[in-house]
Amino acid sequence: MHRVSDHRRGTRFVNPCGPALQPLTKVARMLREPSTPWPPYIDVPASRPPALEGAAAAVTFIGHSTFLIQTKAGNLLTDPMYSRRAGPMNLAGPRRVREPAIRFDDLPPISTILLSHNHYDHCDLATLRRLATRFDPLVVTPLGNKRLVRSAGIRRVEELDWWQDASTGPLPIALTPAQHFSARSPFDRNRALWGGFTLMVGGARVYFAGDTAYAPFFHAIRERYGPIDLALLPIGAYEPRWFMQAVHMNPAEAVQAHLDLGAAKSVGMHFGTFQMTIEGIDAPELALEHARRVNGIPPEQFRTLGFGESVRLEP
Image (cartoon, rainbow, N blue to C red):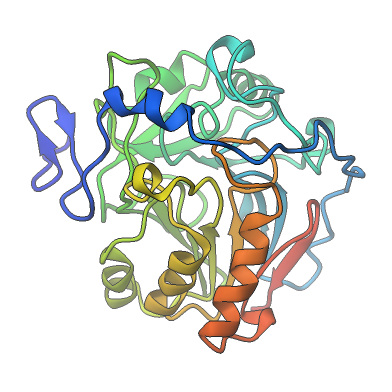
């Protein structure tokens, strides 16, 4: 186990800043909040991975927090989730409204998986088993997740602490802080760490935030690594604010994170796939548009990709 300083207390990890997490006793109250119904299913035409050609990277939105990042050095997946439900044994939890935009069988060879934390909608063991069988990828993940990841048949796992660089993999990768929590059951809360990632791709810096609330570390990421060329930022699952503010940004906070990072471009994620909270399916994108206008940010600087749409990073 790596030495951890300001974000571990005994056997559990903590957020050193930001609002405190709501206790489990508040979950019942949160579940009684009125919610906006989502449609049961939205068709997503299957897309093929784009040709990389002369680009440094092609980043394709598969759905929720899953992106395919194609590079000359190898292909990566972020928080791969291909199952129908985000929950234990894929039998409980929210059901997918949109299918993954790139079918599993159409994925190119995957060398590396960036796994931000152990929540079911980000760490899906069934998907990891399929990836292990087909590609034998390296998984880079925060401290405390190795045993869970290996239970899915993944042979190569590198655990990192915040601000630590990976020593394996085809690209320079570092783990960055996040304001969140971890749990697979009511009994293991915060026994594994959570985080985001930065990676260098052909001279461009990509930031994948994982799951996070808004906190001062976005400034620290910019100070340590310089301005971000492409930030992948969560914009959904944020209501009711009294409960979710400690763990998930709303779109206005995501815009502030974009500004803190000095990002040339940002792309929204963590929306439109699983109904995790009470806001409507279109609310994150509408709120992002409003926050962008308020801050005078052009649409091309912070937008969402269509499911299966790609953005290219030039060398």
